[in-house]
Image 1 (cartoon, one colour):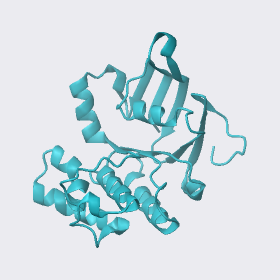
Image 2 (image 1 turned 90 degrees about the vertical axis):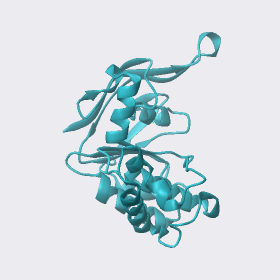
Image 3 (image 1 turned 30 degrees about the vertical axis):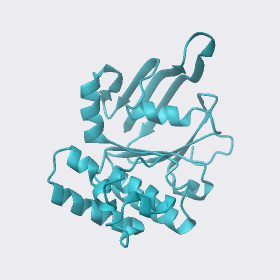
Image 4 (image 1 turned 180 degrees about the vertical axis):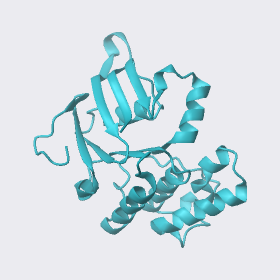
Length: 230
């Protein structure tokens, strides 16, 4: 079943002499029940595409549907509600709240959705522990390494079991063992018959974890020449 579809999606930034075309006529389908890797050179448009799919950016042209909902037809408030209920996003920059502990940061989506604080933080603690942070649950972000902060960001994105998980280089700052653990948890929690995962990555250590690999080049989806997972 198609979970996400993009129809003739293009994206430009700037205007006039400073206009930059980042995506051009992208038509793509991402299936439910699958973990898809999106690969390509830096500047090829990967992060822009997943940001549009996640409803963080709007396309300049085209349509995006996520589990049957046309994101381009939603107003700003509707889009925020849809993202909160359905989409998890793992950013490269982590974006952790500096005054909250590991467990509290992991619980933010649940708290934002109106769940009780204590129950939310417990779920955050449990998930962060599964990602190897059991010794750091009460620490603040500035007491963590970059790789540990990244795992907190991953826990935050997974805690409300989103229907769509979108990740931007989730294993880039992790050693091989931590990256393997993260991919195992992502597959266990985020991949299912009514769920989908899209991961932007340059990390060829995780290529064998994918159900499918999609390549993007100069803002366009292109066939993979190696035939791997395509």
